[in-house]
Amino acid sequence: MREIKISNSLILAPMAGVTDSAFRQICEENGCDKTFTEMVSVNALDFDNRATEEIMYRSKAEKNVNIQIFGKDTDIIERVVKEKINPIEEFKEISFNMGCPAPKIFKNGQGSALMADLKKVYAIGKCLVDSTNKIVNVKFRLGIDDSSKNYIEVAKALEDAGVDYVILHARTRNQQYSGKADWTAIRKLKDSLEIPVIANGDCFSVEDYKNILEVTGADGVMLARGVMGNPFLFRQIKDYIQGKEITRIGFDDILKTIKRQYELSLAYKDEKLVINQMRKHVGWYIKGLPSAATYRARVNKLKTTREIFDLLEEYRKNLEDNYDRK
Image (cartoon, rainbow, N blue to C red; front, side, top):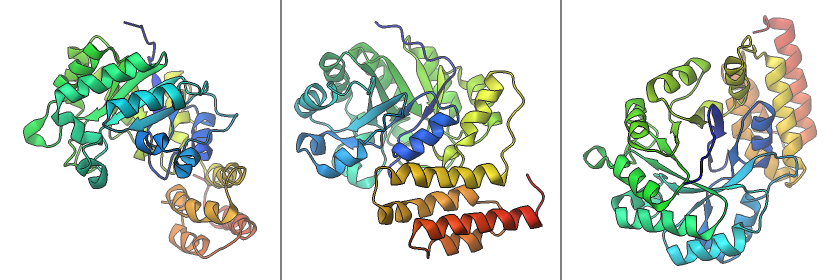
């Protein structure tokens, strides 16, 4: 068994429509240790799907980007890993998703649906490990519902298969993203395994980070919704880890980061696509700031980057003139 050092590891979770190259770069710049692409279908990769290639785009500036895949057919998984993923040197790790709760994926027997079949869980884990020299992790949930919480059995099957570490999102599939993540379950998993365990679920602040590690004893934390519009949380957690004063984030930091994410996106995407995709990000970034709803609505009506940048500058001056800096 390889020894994987991931203590205090801060990881960005793969999120569909969120964790593209631009946002991953923003998170890295703020202290994120490791990122993953949006979830990639091995079936689509097998067919050389163009949209999938776009999802897998990574910038040369990214220091530690990896890939997350999903599927259910071990023959396809093996072929895709050997032929399509192994040759990509930037990807040092392969993450396999056994936790996605999306109805379309679940109904197709993929994502969290795989947890119902421990033999399949083991077979996929073994297939991954045998097909690559890259580090392999698997992400999963507590179970499909409250009556079938088998996360420890799933993890032990993966450990037996030789997987390097696991990531537990401490909710069931039926919970989706509602309710509270059960951090005590992550502690139980940590106490049951020899391989490292990464905690995932409900980390929205530095205080949450402290608490999740205290409760779970996990080897690292994967952040998801907590950094949507707030990649600065990585920086603040790093401040805590390093014993520094926690960085205070003001509206200047927020508006400069929005502009930077636009610029990073425009380096590899069409302007019209960037403008459409960034609308949700802008909404997340400025949530809670004065007049956020007004400026969010205005951004959503603009059609060029120049107009958006001018509006952001107007917003910055408005905040500077009328509100105390946070």
